Length: 311
Image 1 (cartoon, one colour):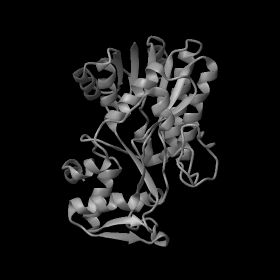
Image 2 (tube, one colour):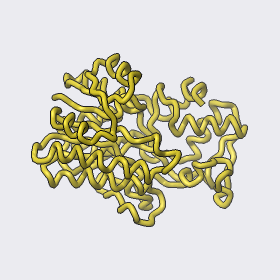
Image 3 (cartoon, rainbow, N blue to C red):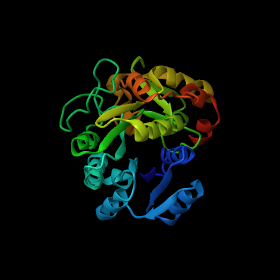
């Protein structure tokens, strides 16, 4: 299969490109810079120069491919417009892919968020839909939900579309800006490792190479209109994460009272995120796609040297 990949040089992208190539697929990666083109070439992929703003170019590239993996987003818009701006820019991209693939039965697999269904008071399953963008519900990154909903909806237009919801903590030895990096940096700055309230709220995690294998499986065999969960550990108490960081850094842990979780308190801009409960299951993903996480888990990552040095 000839696969077009966007975001092939980000955190999750290179493992996806490598996974697809190892499985015998041909990969063309979208590159907007010479550095990105060189990185894709080094991985063994072909290069198509362009960016997410060139919708005609994206349609052309998708039409020439046998399938599309879309993990890129306009991160450059975050400082000025936040997630709303990122989602507003991404929606035309997935719709352009949909136009190019409509009626072909070709696959489109796009990255989503494990938080999109919101905090349901129970572990989120693959069958829980993303909340409407305007819904008032704690625990969801609502701005991007419109993108997930659009991708799933393309199944009604003859596209074998699906969403891979990536865990809140995607870790690897190449992570330079993810949540664990920020948590370690905060701990070093403050001299303690904080957790919200009693720290019982649950988070989830996955290794990026396991994310890559799930994207491949969804591309190769996933039915249309489904959401999949790239979650290896589905219900890790936040306090356990904080304590693991504290052990590795030799620092004490401290509870941050919920009424003190305001910007610019201990967690800064993460204050509205750290209290959320992101418990999630992967039962349908494992059953229907045969996905099995095989890489080292969250605590193995924290016990290693990477996050201590990266943070």
